[in-house]
Length: 63
Length: 482
Image 1 (spheres, each protein chain N blue to C red):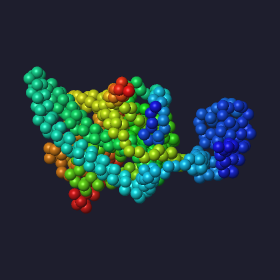
Image 2: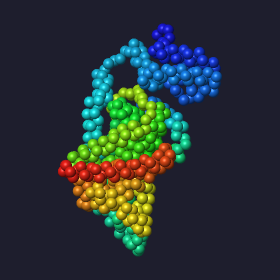
Image 3: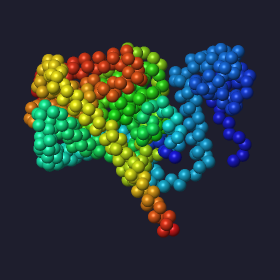
Image 4: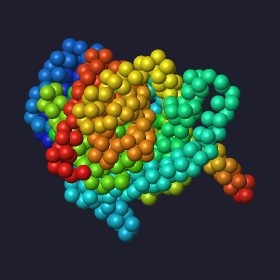
């Protein structure tokens, strides 16, 4: 789930994609438009996600 | 909890709800009362549904909605929303016992301060001073750009690339496509990596901190009163704030505004007076040598924003916009969120900016070869001279049409070469801020508002920016401020 940085609404990224399905850049777009207020929230950087998942993976192994 | 809570509205709304409910004959997936309330709020989906399911009574229902609207000076969606909010607040107060920790009390106090007209303005000025002026202007556009430009690009990369291209390509005219004054490597790549990237990087970092702290919705509340004077409301803070990142994206986001009037006003103001992040950063770097010049630039652009907004709102009359929103709590920004968002924005920016900068350099090279670029410079020359600027600055304005930040980087080069003094830099920065939007933004303006409106806006912006530049130059020379 994504939490809108402007109005605080929580929504699924797929829900955001529906509102801009006509945009030609939708496949490569890294923004999630909030269905409540229209604010464009930036998705986390892929490199950062990778590091986060790796860190979480290490924690799980240690447990 | 015992019994069922029932929200009661004032007598006009309750009366309208009763009358509409009686007219609804078909069955709906929600109660008749809820359908009636949504009809009063002019919900598009429900109105369409009732129009097709209860066709025979739809005219009478519309009549009741119109009658009820005349009882209030604010839209019914606002009146009903406000009653719901007050009711929700009273339920929370009755049923939830707050721990009342010191931290929560401080957060609520700070939240109130950010939205108060006086303390909110002071906080906004502090955010602008430390976030934009000190961090983006002085550190990003000053320290980092100077290091990358002078030490890395001019010291190593550009001489190496020039020697390499000269040894591989024997023809001077073809060498100029890649290196020398307007080469795609020595100009396009240098502008993108050494000037623009550090500026947008520092700007995106500040923006992500502000965004993650929950300050943006409070800013919307703060400016709502002023925005109403120019035909907009607090909701327009979303496209306006995004415009400080990229005007093209922000123009698309104007779709979220309610009426066509609001969309037109917001699109025009975005094209006219909202500089994009890179342009803003370069202008801050150019003017940070003189705090007076920077203050004049800020006040003059803000005045143009309000003046044009006020004028357009009068010339384009329409429904008075209303705005209310739930304000999420203030929070301490999370470092991982801030870094992740900054990186994602920088990556997106680089993917977008480098091909355009390289294409712009190639077009300028073709323009130079064919003589078209010289013709354009000569055409813009008289306007530039009227504003007291050297003819060399005409290049920056033509660059600016490809991308606003490309033009600003052109001004940065002219200042470093010592061609312009601080008065000329101030006038040029003001004209460039107000000047016609870049190609991408203009294309989106056509797509969103139609060819006729977009052309009208571009024409107006060109004339207004030129007139404002000439006027500002005259005022400065007359008063001798700089």
